[in-house]
Image (cartoon, helix red, strand yellow):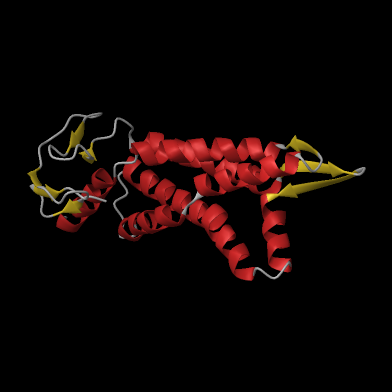
Length: 207
């Protein structure tokens, strides 16, 4: 994240250049004049739109975890693997830490992040400036760093390439839902303007 100095100044997170903040219109982005990295922006999406995206992602999260990612047929035997069953197999093989890490980064962290952001968006959409808004936004920030859907998908595709030579591979509904979940999650993070949400917390404190 960018380094917030005060309400009027901001420091670039890449080159530490101190810059005066200016008001932006929805959809505009402020970039560092030295290194060109994005400093802050004002999202076009309203909290109600982000709430809808979060609910969509939460719905996709269920089939992405329980439906088969793929089915592998070898010597007449077919075995289907879902995300949850894959975590269970890794755990049973003795790699408990790896299994718990996968469960945290691919299932628990995304779910908690989406639930927290959906709750915060609901509160802001209906002007429910409750004390719970601040911990919700903190949870969004923490869980965003632990959510690693893209990393898991890349690892899965690497493993898929190796499995193709071992037998007949059929992609499952779980993989389709997982890819859709990753795309919706990426869309949420690209339009989520944390500063706008935190400004609501400041308004509530002033009141």
